[in-house]
Length: 398
Image (cartoon, rainbow, N blue to C red; front, side, top):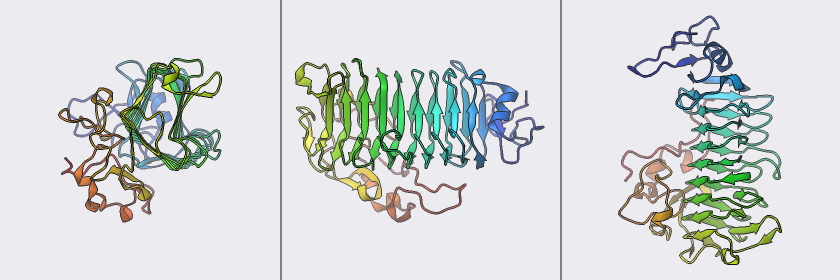
């Protein structure tokens, strides 16, 4: 086992380091890193933290079953600098774990150019967060085979080659959490949460740029059940925003659904493929949603109208001044925090959609460092951030 060290972190637990200048004879310290995650896992096993220095690394990164973690001590692989440890060109998945590999955390990587899924995780209690997953042949992020998974704060774009089979996120399970992600311009659905989704949370996600014939979010459990919570998402999609199959006990509230002509919300009985409504006896709450065009399923407190996004043509879906979505939500259905991870105000009703209204974000100054105000990658060296970090707020944001 290596002698780990971590600079300037006092008494925090030891971690192990990987770098392009790593040596198999090193000790895994910051100044003597190992050459790969695989080598690090072979040295120290699961249940440890491995930090990867900036650089371009050839995939795949595989975490075998024997190197899974446990409660209180997950196996964590993390990019030292967000998006600057880049996993490229894998013949299979970019980063993957075995189906029985529990307690795995993948944090902060840029994953691109894989010939299958960008990130493919199995097992219970695993997490994919802060990653930029783009231009992979199949799914952006796939998470199947386990329960209580978390997919959060990722930028997932331009993945897939098949509009029918390859989606931004393809995941299922019991107790799954999908929150705070930006999912856009993938070949298939934005979020394909299928076939087994129960007792799960889908919150504060932005989904847009889905192909014309696909849905933004599909939530299904073919044999009934559900008890899922789908709240405070913003979905702008040409062929409908939410397709909900069965799902008794599910709550759909405080969302913004904008569709270019099609009904923003569909509710189906999966056994008969009959389009239903909650009035047909299904125990599903659909309310407090802003829909454009109007949907019969937006709820008695639902709204219809222009949400006044800041600059949707530039990928900026923050709320503008005067948006009808401001203060139109139900506190009982709001998540604990907003897209940026800040607590929601308790003295006023919540805003609809993924982004609560912040006056500073109505100014172009808030996007001054972005190329022409666009929320997209442009230029730069591979190891420098090429896309705006949408989870960063100006210091004077209120």
